[in-house]
Length: 521
Ligand SMILES: Cc1ncc(C[n+]2csc(CCOP(=O)(O)OP(=O)(O)O)c2C)c(N)n1
Ligand SMILES: [Mg+2]
Figure 1: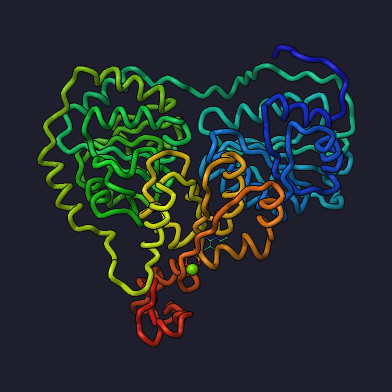
Figure 2: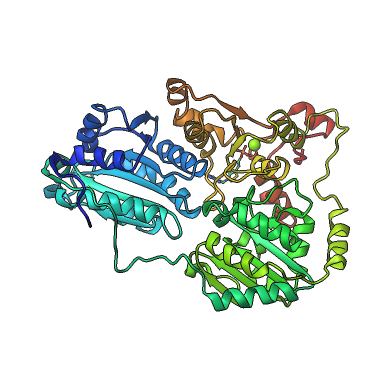
């Protein structure tokens, strides 16, 4: 590690200098005793701005929304003990969706660690299963290199949140400040290039396919590989679907796009997944909401090619025929080179079949209804924002309507908690997205239950949004409480009266039996 600067600083100053070196614009945080020295230093400079939230969960979600919408690292700062435990949901949310973040946590002084000190918790232990990496920095001399490593690990390979736990006395202690220019770790060297032989095999399979299908997930968005994906799909003429996390990687308005797949996806996308003979999966993980039971999915014979940066994601739920580990942009670049001057099979018959499935118009709804349908609200939102808005959501039926009816033509415009499914994510994430994209229109599509943890209990958005002039619109399709659970409970209801959903909250709708959300009156 090369030295670039040497001067004596205390730990708190080192933290701020490291953030400056990394070009961090915003830190989303909430103060406490263990991080007071860091806060002192934060306010002595203005390169790194601080956004004060009202609850640590909101700080982490805001840093997360900032990252998802910008491809930059999100940074959060919380105090020890309860600060950390409040941040846990935000960290787990980011981890499930592979979002690059650095979470700085205060810790009790080193001499008090393990003694049940005031506001002490085992941050490294608690966060271990929900971070890409975490570390407790016990010596100020290790602080700069820990910070450098944190940013490096968060952003390389499969991205993810990294926690740096800093005891209070370490923020006071002094040492010579040396910010490493690069990081080398013997045990961490993520690959970029895919295996040439495997890529050749994959291209051969794609060229022989009579019923090909491309299925892509959040990995394509995270790798900024949308352009390469579009080139490849247009060159081959293959049908494509995106997961909930992958929306926007391929333009939703394009004819080759079959819509989202999975439990809340389109009929045509799910049928094409089931009946294809060659499936090209890119940056996706065959999760339970996408393919359901892997045993059922495996019943139809098909060859599967899987491109992913994370080898542990390959053949995890579904056995894959051609695994390719590597950075998606690099691998697609190699695939494109091999595809030039080749001719895929004639797949007209396959497209005819897909169009028959598509003709069922599975997302149709009553457009003549006197009551404004939530689907209509989402379509209007798309129209008035000309499809250019950044849309965040919470979790529930409104999330699925947004995914189905707002046509995302660009990546990083659709921001939702796909993996953990965290209610209360949407509004703070919108705040972060607005900070990362000052001129953009940002709308949070939410439900009346999800907005409560975000706006009422935590008071997360009000002051920070106003204080930083970040205008975020909240769109709340009117619907009875817990709509998504009504639907699910209704399906399970048969034979189990105990699961009968509660009465519709709207008296008039109950009387006329015309509930907007179609719930059981
Ligand atoms: C923190 C958290 N608690 C509980 C749940 C379980 N859950 C999933 S959707 C949902 C209902 C959401 O209701 P609302 O925000 O009104 O959305 P709707 O489905 O009505 O659109 C609940 C309780 C969750 N996802 N997250
Ligand atoms: Mg609701």
